[in-house]
Length: 291
Image (cartoon, rainbow, N blue to C red; front, top):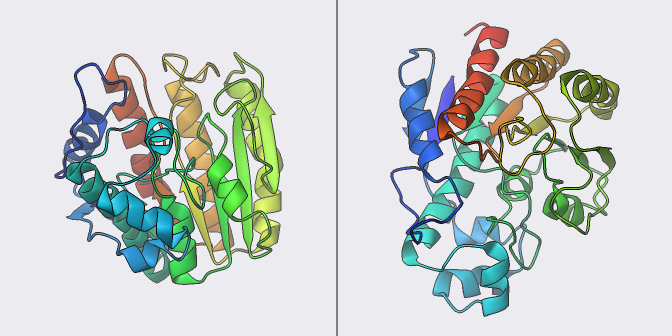
């Protein structure tokens, strides 16, 4: 299975910053031990590709380091050339994963899932919306299945008027963002919802995804629903997340729909739990697709 990474590019962050940048390297190192995975460094996305999903003026301002300070604060990262390089490669990883999925049925990005980025601004550790860029570049009829604990508000807004893109978000109803957008399908969960409630909810929306008959599904496989996650609040277990991933992959495999997996969030303490949960997603994919 082809996976694409960008952790060789480092985001310079101040000491104590809460973004768990180390998880990307640790995840790659974990998956490199499994010979079913072919991991390559992602080629960066171009400004022209990104501008298919974002305001070109916003794209230029970010690349040149002249964004409004308020937007920088909402993104949550200090601007640097390192952030620019890493951001372009992260979007590039999802582009590579989408192309691999369309060719072979599966592709994975060890990055991405930046679903809080809107057309003309970023938010919540998201500069550009990698899934939106990949959908626009590939020109596909697509579904976004967002299982991060936080609503995919930027993705919902970007595609709100696009009938060829189905946006689905399962998320904590009391979690960030405070002001939710309207996805085509939203399924909010109360705090402390566990595996049984969550998996039943997922089972209720998968038939609607299949009925849409997308040419590709972008699976935002955030693992921040874990009980140990500092930002989660849904009380899911590692076993529950494996069952979640298996449900998704078996449904898509049965329908013959290509899937591109992107990471999304994960903020568990210790970080090893986040890395294990992310790795489980790709291992479950390899098991399901028989690689």
